[in-house]
Length: 99
Image (tube, rainbow, N blue to C red):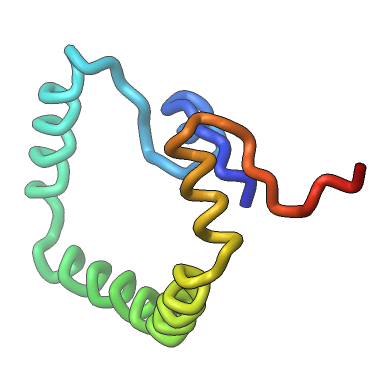
């Protein structure tokens, strides 16, 4: 929720990604994973994919809700201030200065 950047090693540590690799090793790692996946049972892979997709399909109402919320937010002064501050490389001022 804070919008902090997460490094690849940290994303790996907390389980957001399977593995973080240096750029120069990426092609070899991808090739290895493809070889391993192709050695698996095609039917087993198909069923696994169906199961994973089913879980994702259940989130569609949440995604639609999120789009509607964002659409509402785009027209607000708060969104304008946040965007202007980001582009101007300054901290946003969402509330009036109390002084």
